[in-house]
Image (cartoon, rainbow, N blue to C red; front, side, top):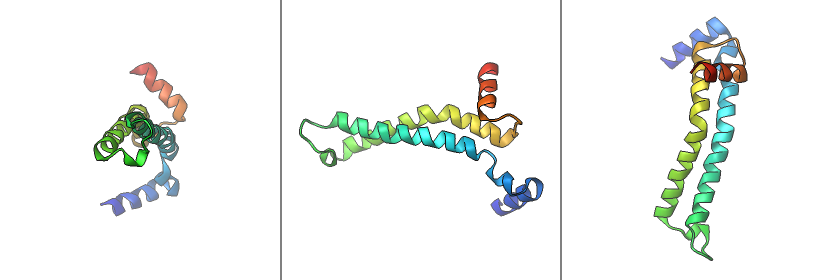
Length: 107
């Protein structure tokens, strides 16, 4: 159960173990969501008719904008997420940039 896993992490690694991989999670989230919201707003703007307000573009265009935002998000996030997951699982002694370079060189 999640509670048992949490207890085990605290017992073996201390409280800091609960935050292992947090830096890479933040490195992943910040640019990812920047691209998400940027992609959403850009798509909405491109789908608008001249002199139309963004709020008036309708469901389908809003839905398309959300889909494009998701694509922008994952294009940026997926490679960083792969590194983050490896850091959380394997707990390398290297920091995020060095470990990322090692993965790029070896794969």
